[in-house]
Length: 253
Image (cartoon, rainbow, N blue to C red; front, top):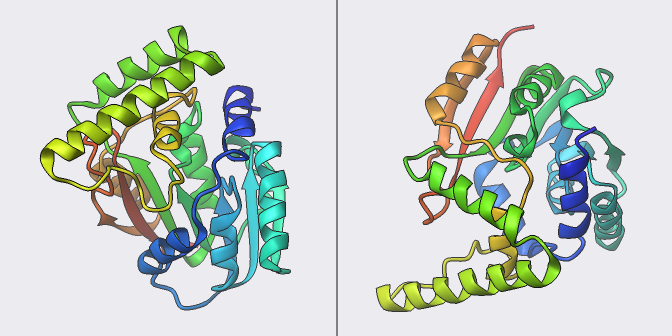
């Protein structure tokens, strides 16, 4: 069990549930399937993605390593009144082999947070039914990625108590506002996020983070019997912390 990631998201998602309508708007722009039988929300966290999927799928299974996040997800599901969602405590690195034959697998910004992301990705491919689709969002590797990792290491090593973490988050939030104002831009915050501070904490404080390029992930899928393409190549303005999304359809049995 990846205890470090569990502990981080045990305290993160209960405090920072995203904005549901923005989450739904993004997902419905991204997912092309109008209806599927079974969907897997791999790393369901706060549960909002599972709720959106439940409007497209007959049955949704949401799995997450964080028990406190799952409690938050159960609350969100109950408030939404959805009865076709099952939430399970699972580490995606050792996903239960019985979880398989999903028509749609959604894993947005999760796999690269595991100590061994390749284990996660292979488990997602295994869990996909022939003809099924995987939507996988990962952090993009650029020349700035080592800088991002250095800042993360510094924050986690030297600024990792509640007060120090707040100083870091407030500092980067203030810096973001100043830079955006000078550039005449809107505040650099993902639309579904509740605050810049929440976004900063999720950038710099998770215990693990691995960066990839679209080509290597597309090649990984193709070598494992999928047709794959990058459908979104850059979702954020921060070059050191932007996500790309690959859509992959399983062709092999």
